Length: 426
Image 1 (tube, one colour):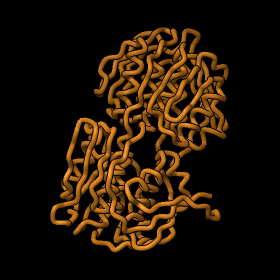
Image 2 (spheres, rainbow, N blue to C red; image 1 turned 90 degrees about the vertical axis):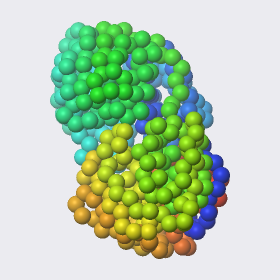
Image 3 (cartoon, one colour; image 1 turned 180 degrees about the vertical axis):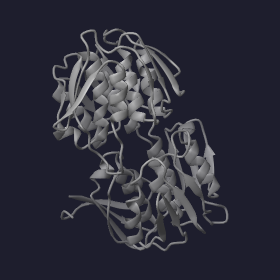
Image 4 (cartoon, helix red, strand yellow; image 1 turned 120 degrees about the vertical axis):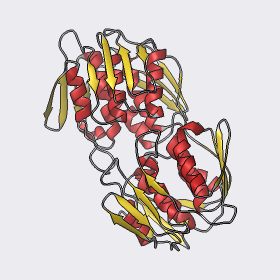
């Protein structure tokens, strides 16, 4: 099994180019089930989750060609509506094929999803919304079995009890081919949701309220869509992670090919911690505090545009180097502090109290063997390893490979000493 070896204490410098957003690319791939034409997608991140969903699409009967960061998908000949457990178990985003398959074919079977073990992310929001649109749904032997009346899904008024990114995406895609008007309230506002709505609008679906909590979709009544060429938006979490790499090593790093407004909450917190940030049209440059002292910060995770839960672990690592105590509260997932025990192995002074952590700051981190437990926890350990004395070995980095393209290469280009090695399974 692969592990990542990091030799800490190196200053970073230079520029890192951000890849396409995994969390935007996944619903885009799922949405091609609604297309009647071959769809070209650029800036596709070359990560494991993308390959997993493409494998699922191939099982359903789609044809695709992935070359570097360019993808072409032809889903016009999809002939299966069963998303099997052996693929879906590895990635929760597989649930995104539910809406497109159901609205196009009138029936489907999708295995209940797997993925990172960071707490309850129930699919009941998706299912209740589809039922309001007329779907009949049962859970049988670990599969969501769904069917529609003969005349397909019908437009409905849907209110999400809780904001859900994949829930919003799934129902917008389902509504795209439905009959009549669907009004969705309490929608997620994330840039990834905005992009999938824009893609469907450009493909001929009447959509209003993009980027707001109220989205109105007028379905095509079963007619497949003519997709335009697509470019995946930049990955705001990858961008934030590399800004934190510059921050934790007190280095000057330029993060390019980004959309600064997508990472404004992260920028705000870094500025609170006394880092100097230069913001351009498509880049952000971070420099260390003028007095060399990293300030403490208090953070509460929330839905976009507030501070993202996917940056919480990275900031827990970063605040171990602050000059005083920081408090970070997690309000979206109840089991997202699994990285804390691994950071403690490196010497971090962190206490967990219910849904928040108190990070004492000024921790002298010492390299050790640590184990990744989920995607973002993995990146927190990488950040800690960059400043830990000696050698840090991060095991089970298949979590990292799910969401970060060419991580060790990008870090090496910035001056870090990082290598991928083979180790015995832990």
